[in-house]
Length: 64
Image 1: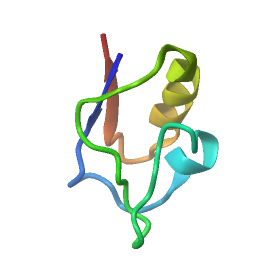
Image 2 (image 1 turned 60 degrees about the vertical axis):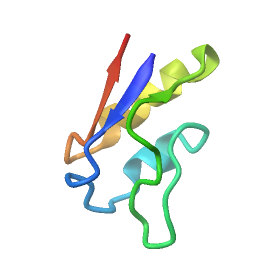
Image 3 (image 1 turned 90 degrees about the vertical axis):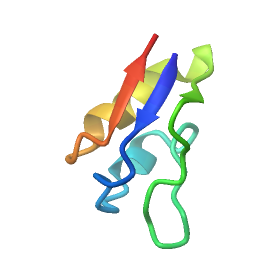
Image 4 (image 1 turned 45 degrees about the horizontal axis):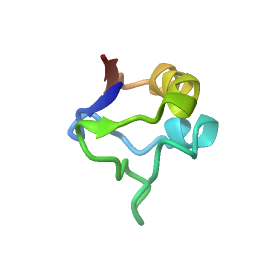
């Protein structure tokens, strides 16, 4: 699965990182540091889904 990221939507809440630090990283300012199109390892898909759902701005999507 690939993680799509709308960096302009990120408001720096950090909820994605709080629930799934193995998938989501933040930059020094607290905004998402994951690149659009990042491949999510099979063992991290459940965590990625938690992070996607946690984002109040809906800045992420998972795609096959």
